Length: 612
Image (cartoon, rainbow, N blue to C red; front, side):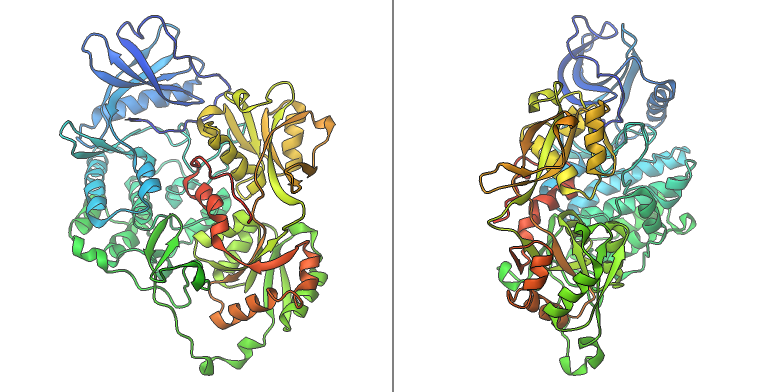
């Protein structure tokens, strides 16, 4: 059962209103059960005691700021102006006896598109057109009335069912400002500053709040791309980097459409034009899509030269070489590029390899690391340092570096882009291993049962131990952090997380630790002065990786992997990075982190990522 509201809402310093009410709201709405919960309030299934109609009632906290109240009114008024079978009906609005605002909408039966894609990966041509054509028609009708949605995304497309069981896609949250309800891929700091990646926002929408219908066209283009491939067409996780990536998105690039049926190439390219004036109208986009038939599904865009799907070098790991898992979907494998070794430029096999690392990556000395790589590979190597993993991922994707030293989350992000191939990973078997400790403020949070309604701080989007894995631990225990926590924020470092817990600015956080063979913590960055309680410790997190750019020739990548997995040749490098051995990379070990990155909300068990 899905209400016509997003699953996440923006943080508030107020606790959400209680569901236990002795009298009907506005003397006519009796609350039946809770559907969803967030910082702004609670969504209930309710019944109109006069008409006996079941509805979705969004009950807000009485202390909402005026700007939020005004936007809530705007949502109701906008939806009431637009009468369309594929737009959720707003039935009523008012104030409860305690002053809490409420919004009443039709109760929708079914999952949303975000949930469907998590479950099935990608859509067939028939299902895609059945969903998107009615939604595009609804948006076209809105545009003709001068209404711009501004927040079109899969979680705002509910796949409802009519009484006959037929699919009726419904566009929800029409007219509500994008800053009100938390985007599935967005995180908000404690002071309300946006830190996430609004993947579906048009370039002009990020820098200018006054946008027109072309912004919705862009968002639909991103949704189409995701529905066909299982991924959005860009990856940056920091707002300023995402803006740069979106503003430079090349809609003509062959890489943009890897895995996309070529029948959809024209409408997606048109919708993702950076210049709003070059995008089609919704009606024009609908015409393009309506001409597509199911017969077109078998035809795909050929891959760009040098493109390699994930794990292509690991033939033994994939029993069916015609299918590779790309992100969260299985797509037909592209034909491999055959390289005639005799035609290769001889300088390619002897030139110095450029190896990218981040400035603070394990405090490795550039000269020592360069010499260790030269010794292991028996060829020239140069070390290039980057300020952040986002920049390093961009560089390896563009071929500015040949190899990249990436920790687990950075590798998964780069692999999702198709930018890298993992060659080797660091193993520390038999020694203390890296893990994540979920922490609570002493005397306030000591167990999972204490987490609800608390404030959490995390390191950043790139942190396995400081973000993805502790959130997975919460989900594994049935605690959805996006619904249970009062607020979440990024503070940039483990030190800042511990300081926030020590000062009382936060109640929940996470830090790295190392554990021995018996699971006991043997090293930790916190002390008794930080005043924290260990709620739980994760299983060992898979190690760092060395990845090759997707543009690096296959024979060079194979030679690098063979040299680095030679225990004698790679011994100095293994000692330098603190590894028991350097082993061939196996993508399966990183599946849990991959799921965490793709869906934002982990399924139970995804936290237990074993490094076997």
